[in-house]
Image (cartoon, rainbow, N blue to C red):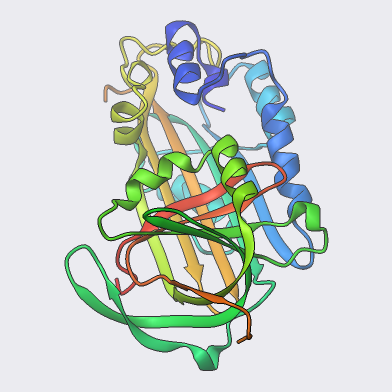
Length: 337
């Protein structure tokens, strides 16, 4: 959404960071949104929403607004930034779209803020094979710095599984009426000598497709931490340091010529993402919201059973094999926090 409002080298920098080799593919966003919406049903809840919030005295190009309406299905609202009422409109919208899981995505907004681009997503899913609550016991989990005692879920069943030299991967499917649209929780258990962060690089569509194709249905004795994760991330630092996106943050260089005629000192002042994910015996609930603020101010069986006991830091991701989309991903270092 941000890219559409940019021009010149500022736009090229974003395209490079996003890996967009052919900017002419205008319908990619709509295809992704449709793929997500088609997944949702009575067995699997998935909601995604995009919002364009504009300061009441600021004017955007009609073509920019229409593009967000037509390609992202964006809700468009006029707000008064710098006021509690303005913040409340955005925060209430995000809370509604995420079933209350994400609160206060905007805080302490300034009258210099002109536009907020917001994406919200919510997922609630039940396992195809739930964990029996009576089998959940307190067990040890080895964090990078200590041992902790946490609730560990347990079951025995058949799951897609792949074991490597110093890691193991298992997929735990969610219920869905349409098997083609089904989603899974992928869990990567690594050897203590391996930093789980190194595994995040494999969470891309092409690599995951290859890994999953190598998996075999195995009888697993599974132990998985029951956990809840809530986090708030300053995406500004990530965009700058990891993706090399810098020009859009500079009020003297940023080119917002695709968004508005009033571009003097317009720049991306803040980028925030809040995430929530809960994994328990019944399934997974997850939500996330991302906000980009644009401102004018400077800135049991007899068969062989293999153990898949996840009792040290692990990588998790919510994945749809059909589309290759990774919806949520992260590393759990300490489930006791």
